[in-house]
Length: 334
Image (cartoon, rainbow, N blue to C red; front, side):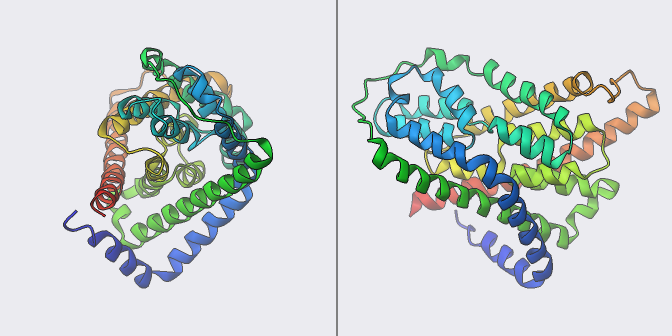
């Protein structure tokens, strides 16, 4: 990319101009990663690595990657799909389809970190689980048509696989932690520029959406503290969790080349998950009122609210695409 140097220069200038904001954001993000993400994700990353080394995924139908990706959490689905592509079992196109459907958040993460830890309401886990995994199931039917080639991948003995799995799990956790810290720092630097002030009373919501599009945990944490209706906060959180944001895209790209179709599929499932969670929340959390028909003035206000959310989402998505495809082009050109 001709002007690829512009992004890191802007980030470096921002770090020099607003060091206190960057340090505070990085400290809070590191604490969130250490206290919430490591305990809930590391065991599943190790288990996912052991499963991959056992050779079992290469002997099962492609659709079986869905439960493996669901239980293992990000980025196990992309890692399994990438491994099947590298050993010749799947074509690149089929591997990208599988990764787009099977790269999912871990259920323990949804229950303990998001619902219990960030929203402080375990009941919020039910609409998230139904919306995120229900959408994944509905969009996984293309996997049934994928035909796999025979694989000669050999399994690794447990005595050798366990230390390797622990090392891989810690390496993945460091990548996740770095992504959380980096996304939080980017959000703080953007906030220091005053760009979120353009959204008026929705400045905090715009910042939370931008954070979530960079890294889902940071966005969910910011959303949980906003004075917005619970269905809207959970719906936006479901969008982040299903899409994954820049962090998950970059982690996925380390195992498998990305494509516009991959990202489009992620966005589509994220929108469906958000809609499902929005309407499921009043049914799953009894003290949340069920949405009813609004007056004309209220509908107009809702339209302005929606426009603000769309604009801030579009702004965040633009940044995500610039980062993702800018880095991927530089990697191909290297």
